[in-house]
Image 1 (cartoon, rainbow, N blue to C red):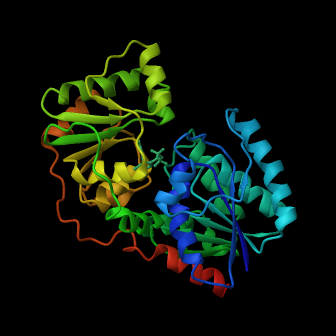
Image 2: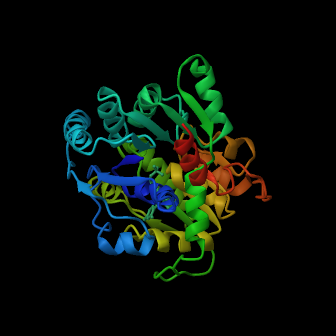
Length: 351
Ligand code: UDP
C-alpha cells in the first residue's frame, strides 16, 4: 500500500510523525511525505526531523507567502503532479490548513482515496479559514478519523450517517505525540523566576483585530504584575504589536523548538492561549488553561472545566484568572489515551 501524506506546518509534521512511526512498523506500507511549504519555518532544518524522530519530506513544494486563493491554487496544481507521478492508494491529510484542503481536492479529482485525520471538528465560525477547510475536506474524504466523540456528533448532525464515508473515532494523534515526547522534553533555556504562566497568541482573529489584541495585552500586563508570563512570540504577532506601539510586560521569547515547548508546558502553572493544540497539551500535561478565543473545537475540555473560554475580554480574562474553579482531576480519558495512530494504520490496512 502506498500513502502520500500532505503536510504544511510544523504542528502537522509533529502529529503526522506519530503516524509515520507507526507506519514504519509495517513493511507492506510505503509513505511518501509532501511538504507544501505553507508555513515557512526556519526551525524546520534537518535537526528538527532528527530530534523529533520524524521522517524528512520527500518533496518540498515551497509554496508560501501568498494569499489564501493563490496558495491553495498553486498547491492543488503541484500536489496533482506529485500524485500523478506517485500513484498512491491513499492520500492522508491532517487538520484544517490550506494544505489539507488542497491535498484532499487534488486526490479527489484523481479518484484517490482520502484519509482525513482530525476530522469532524467544528468551531461553527465560518469566518475562520480553518472551518471552511475542515468542512470541505471532510465532505470529499473516504475515511474520517475523529479525535473525539463530539467530532463524531458534529458529522452525524451534518448527515454523514447517510453518506458513503467511513467515520472512525480513533482518538487524538496529538496525545500519542505528547506521550512520545514527554520524556524527551528539554529544560527551558530562559531564566524562570519560580511559578509562571505560559502564553501564546497567534490567531488572526486576535492579531488582526487591534481591539482584541489590546484587551488581551492589557489583561496579560495586569496578571504579569503578580506572576511571570512567558510568551513565545510568533513573528506575526510581534510585528503587529510593534506597529501599534503595544507594550507587553511579559517575558517575550522567540518561538521555541517543540521539545523545549514541552519543557515549558510541563513546568507551567497555567496556560493562556488561542492555539488549538496548546489547549490539549495543557490537558495532557495536567495544566489548567484559559483560552483567548470566543469558541473552541475542544468542547470536552470546557464541559469538564479543564479549560475556560475568556475570548478577548480583559475583564473575563482577569475574572477567570482570579476565580475560575478548574477541574484538577485529569484522569479522564478524553482523547483516546495514545492509541490514535495505531488505530489509523490498522483501519487503512483493513479498508
Ligand atoms: N509550539 C512550539 N513552539 C512555540 C509555540 C508553539 O513548539 O514557540 C507548539 C505548541 O506546543 C503546539 C503547536 O506548536 O503543539 C501549536 O501550533 P499553533 O499554535 O501554530 O497551531 P494551532 O494549534 O492553533 O493549530
